[in-house]
Structure formats: C-alpha cells, structure tokens
Image (cartoon, rainbow, N blue to C red; front, side, top):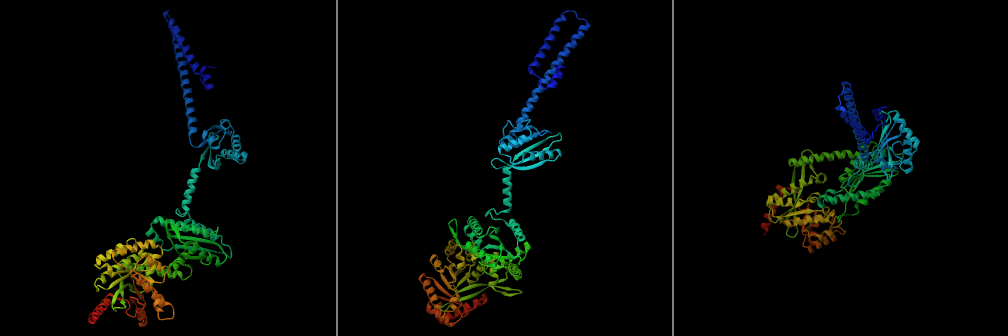
Length: 630
C-alpha cells in the first residue's frame, strides 16, 4: 500500500512523519545534484529529472494532507463549540438509535452524567438514565419504540415534559433523509408563562382581575347548557350609581380603588359555582347558578347590596356608594344568551328609570318602556340643539313685608307633538345621559339675563342637579353667567338638595365654598327629607333652608308637622339663615307660617310658575302697589 493509500485509509497523518518524508526527499535531490559534476548521459539526465519531480509531488501531497487534517480538527472544534452554545438541547441519533452528538445544554437541562450522554450511547440507555435521575417517569421502552417507529415512517413528533424544578420542556424529533433523526429540546417555561399571561389578560379585567365581558359570555353559555330540570339561572347587571362623580371629584386613582374594593366584595357574596365579572367602567355582572327558589336570588341581592352600601375607605376617603341592578332569569326570560343579556340590561334600565339605588326583575313591558325612553332621549338632544326649552318663574312672597323677594326659575319643555313634558319625565333622562350639564348652563345663563331687569331687591333662584354639581367647572360657569348678564352675585341663589352632599360631602363642601367665594347665596332645598340635614347645617353655613312641602301639607293637622317647622325655623334663625315654606296652598297655612316665624312662602296660594313676560308684569304690579301703599 502506498503512503497516499495508507493516509486515506487512516484519515490521519502524523505531522512528524510528513516533515520526515519531506526531509528525505530534499536529501535525495541534493545528493543527485552533487553528482552532476560528472558527465551525465541523456538517460541519466532524464532519470534525474523524474526523481526530482517525484520528490516534489511527494512533498506537496504530504503537505496538503497536513493542512487538511488541521482544518478538519479546527472545524470539529468549532462545531462542538457551536453545538454546546446554542440555547436548546440537541441530540443527533443515527439510524440504529445511537447518539452521534449530544450537546452540553441537553446534559445540563436534565441533570445527566456526561459519561452516559455521549456518542455511542443508545437512546434506551439515555432515557433510562433520565429515569434514574428523575427527569423521566414514563415507560422507557414504550417511549423509545414510539419515537423510533415514527422516525422510520418519516413522521416527526412533538411533546411536552417537565424537567427538575418544574420547568416546561418541549422535545421535537425530526427524521433525517440519510437515516436517524435530530432531537431538539427547548426550555419553554418563560414562553409558556408569557402565553398564559396573555391568555389571562385576554379573558380577565386588568384592574379587578374579574372575568371580562368575553369570558363572562363563555361562562354564561356553559351555565345555560348545564341547567337541570327544575333549576333556574340568574343574570344580574350591576351599575354603580354616580361613580362618575367619584372620578370627577376625587380622581381616577380613588375611583380605581373603589372598583377593586367592590370587586372583592362581590366575590365574597358568591357561591363557588357563581361568577362575577366586570363588563367595563362601573358595570359588573353576576351569574347565579343552580337556583331552586326565588328566595335564593333575593338573598344574594340582599348580600350584594349590603356589601356595596357598606362605606369603603379609598385613600382616606370614606365613600358610601350604591347600585342599580337588573335581573333576568333563565329559562323563563330566555335560554338564548343574547336574549337573556338583553333582558337583564332592560331590567337594569328599569331600575335606573325608577330612581336608581334599587333592583328590578325583567318584565315583558320593559322593552316598550326602554324604546320610549330612548326616543325621549333623542328628542331631548334635538330640543337642546333647537332651543326648544323655556323658563317659567314662581315667585316667593316675603311673609312679613308682603312683597316678592325671590323667583325660582323652573325649566319647561313644550314638545311640538306631545305638548308639555313634565320635568319629572325628562330631567332623569338628562341626568343619566349627561345632557343635564348643557341644560343647566342654559338655565343659569337665561335666568341671570332675565333677573338683571327685575327690581334690585328680587333674587333669582336656580336649581343645581347633583350631576351638574359634580362638575369641577361649576363655579366657573356661575361666574361666567354673572359676568355675561351683569347680575349682582348677591341676587343669585343656587338651590341644592342633600343628594349633592350625600355621596362625598368633602368634595361637595369644597365646591360650595368656591360658590360662596363668588358672593352667591346657597339654599338647601327639600330640607327634612334626607338623612343628615342637621349635620350639613353644622358643616356649611347655608343662606336659606327650604322646608319640604310634605311638612306644610299637614301643618294645620294634629300631627307633628307644626312642631317640626317651628324647630327648623328656630335652627335657621340661630344660624342667621332665612326659611322658605314650599307648597303653600291655603290662607290657614300662610297664617300659621307667619306665626311660626317663617321668612318666605312659595306655592299656588300666591302664584303658579309663569312665563317671563308674566313675571315681569307681576313684579311691576307689586312694585306699583308697594309704592302706592308707601
């Protein structure tokens, strides 16, 4: 066998041997050249040339093999380095299921011994070693046979397993055309956690961690399919009353804390099979399952109301809130998910229409009422745009002097088709939709422009809605109306009810002080119908108290009305406040009020609310009468 053949068969050439052969070839050439001093024959010259060429060829061949072996060794080192530095584990098997390559990440991933996981090791021995070290708990032969069988069929496999420490591992086996296969092993723990987080975010509310609208529908669909004969399912739509006022007055951070607290309290009211969700904003929903009697739903309603109404401390603000709740029952109110949700929404709409802070079960007539209310809302928007409103004014008579001391501005809507629409019908719609802010500004501007033409001693009273009062810009709007009209601030009286104060009295008192700083007068309307009237009188010095008509109606009776009115008059006098009796309709009531020391009276006995033209005539006639008496 020639040197070249031996080198090819062995695949390796000793560098020392290569250098020795080259040296020998060089010595041979030098020797032959030394004999050139003799006269050479042509034959000897040709032989000499052949020997030199052969020596050069041998040298070049040996040198090429030396370079190739060095390059091959370098490439092997580079390959090993690359394979051991990829983040995934990698095992290359030959056609007989023995390891050709097994990288370091694979060994470390499963905590294996490098002495086992190395070239030549069979797959069965490798997996058995994983079983010994605790990273595999299945049947070794069954596992290996399944993979080898799929590889022979040209099918790849993908499986998830668990490594020590609870790490999630994905193993992919891919067959090779030349036989054997490559297995890649990846730690997908973080990716799995990220996927789970994304899935959670897609189905749960980020603020409260309650199911969101999408998951709520899925749970409801499952619950509807699971209803058993004789059972019911309740869907409750819950709307937190006046939540926007909390956000406006105290900021979104406090509002978010309130929503999270309500979510926690809702969870505490439910059974394990029930579901609470946040649909968005201040809207929540509840699914009550496996209901066997109406009593169970009423008990849950009571628990929810108790949880929501209990004062909540949010960043030092003690907030008392309430809710409107609409309930639809399956199967009675529908088994179709969209129909059931629509009926629950209609029931919620009914609860809001009835004054909020209450609940309503779905009834068949609610759909027609909702459509009518929606139609009224659209017409209300159009009337605001078209200027379809007017103000009437009801005078307040000074009981001692006998003259008109103030006029209350009252909003009227004359519909072109329906005629006069009562404020009791359209004001709640305006408040629910936020249109009350536009209406309130118009009333304030119009009333001030009208009153500036009245006698200077006559005040103008304007009602302020609780929704309007929550606006941070109320004081600015009042100042703008006064400036535009030229009306003296002392002639403007703003009437508020306890509803303005009851939700967050600290923020309300701050606005009241802003208004007082403008120089306007503040009257507390419907005094005695709320829960905390006396405490409010202590905390803010109102200019006037308006005694509710319910006390005036029975003033001449045998009840305690006269005693209550007397107590109110005494309280007001002690704090330098005036008093106005509402709803005075008889001379007897007027006489008794004068005796009790009430300052003013307002009611049909003297005058109904009348248009601006008529109030001017009335004020003019009273002025002339007063002048003639003088």
